[in-house]
Image 1 (spheres, rainbow, N blue to C red):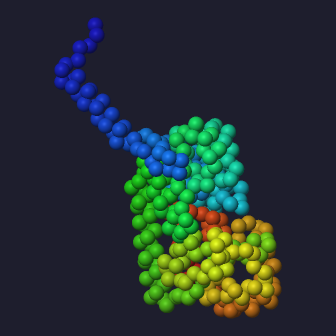
Image 2: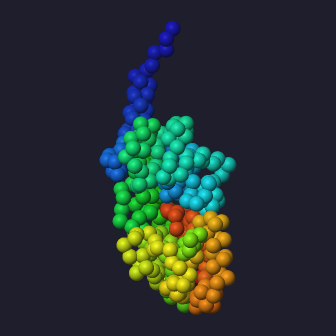
Length: 311
């Protein structure tokens, strides 16, 4: 004999169903992306990131993606990311400019976080797999990472976690600026990425140089970069005097760049730089300092700055 529900029981079940519907509706959202409005529902669980900044934001929000692309100049995720990964590691989906669509499909994602530079052709393929969130392209600026992280946080339904991560960076930056001022640490600074062909001056509009500015250093190099955007042309060893400031942050992407830098250190052009003689050359990881983006990258860069300037 079938059980007969009382009126109060029926009303109770109806209330639960309506509450569940209300929660689902509240979690449905429309995101403003580079390819128009994208609808995302609920809290995605199977996430693929196709950009280092997206991987950074996802981890900062407490999500370990199923897939990610390699860092620039490497064959896996960036070294600074390793400390935020547990036993579960994202599968490699290729490189940011050459995404393996089949590898993405194999992960059966319910959300894809992609770079602003994603091509229309790639978007059309990826958006058939899952909602694909692509940030708007912005003019080069040191704090672009914040808007990107906020968009990814919306997509992940983890806005509060991203806002907390951004606020933590801002607070630490302000505290480090106060500490450096108290220690009377200041002066001009260059960020240089050393490639096999020689050094390139990096823009003051990167996340790393932006943080250097915010803690009190005067980042130089805009006149050498001109309208090129992210970095200057390769400088010859004879022109190294153009990067002779109070502080020199030297970044290499891989072993080839490191080998070229070690060879340059043997030259008189390098050793006679005032910044070298003052022992204020700071070696840094180029994958982090000239390629990474996001709140976790910002914290790692601040770690390096604090270790170098407040030993």
